[in-house]
Image 1 (cartoon, rainbow, N blue to C red):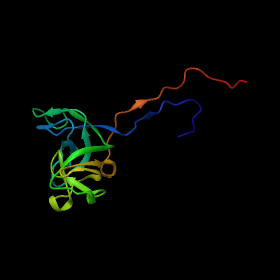
Image 2: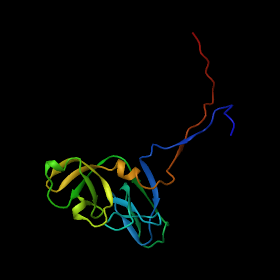
Image 3: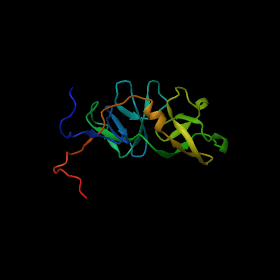
Image 4: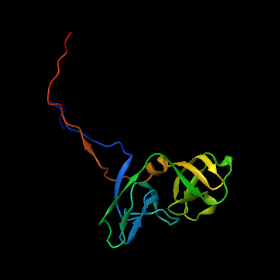
Length: 162
């Protein structure tokens, strides 16, 4: 491609929201941890081999009566979230990696079978809850086409003046 000779409308995304087609016969609840299966469809997070964390659902998406991809769920794939922790947490868990037990519960590696990495504990909130950062775990997985916005080329030209 040649270099630009005029303004260009460039699509961009902040990367925090992602729309993912949902697996058939699946309901994903708002605020839940969401994974993608080997076929690339969104499913509730679980301790199931082959899943990758995708983010946290922004709204409920009930594809229970549909086929793969009939509906899509929007997930947030960056940030800190408060989730349940299976078992008792103490302050020394700060900074520990956590793995999916289900779509609202995380656990350490000893408490799960398939090590579906969800994130890192940022703050222990009590014996059974923690704030976790999902950024690194989500970005280490697959990527998909993100919702985009287009920047419009300016309609007027400005010139410098004194």
